[in-house]
Amino acid sequence: MYEIKVIDEFSGAHNLKGYKGKCEALHGHNWKIEAVLYSGGVNKKGMVMDFKDFKEKLKKVLAPLDHKYLNDLTFFRRENPTSENIARYIHGKLAPAVGKKLRVSVWETDASCASFES
Image (tube, rainbow, N blue to C red):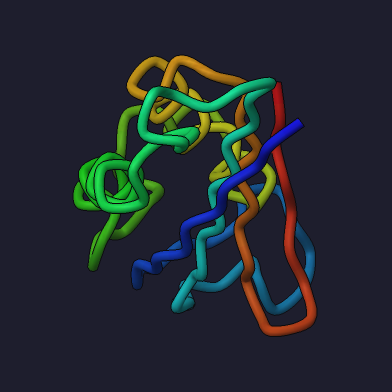
């Protein structure tokens, strides 16, 4: 099994609904996003996907999140904007564009991340 990974980031604000603690208040993060694409084979060029193309697809998905208050976005009006749900959101937008098994990890800090894979 092959895997390739690209990393990007976005900055945004959120507050967690129904949470008792600091994260209940409005605050922001510089989230680091890792996207890993899996494949049982490579194309004629010997690649799972060109890194440039993969990074562009991820950047396109992240653009609507960058410098936004996530709670205002339609998806996060229904879902709490936790790192887990942000990973699921990004995965849901990126998966159709790449068409392969995918894992998205959202790093809230250097020591804490959540991932969604399918």
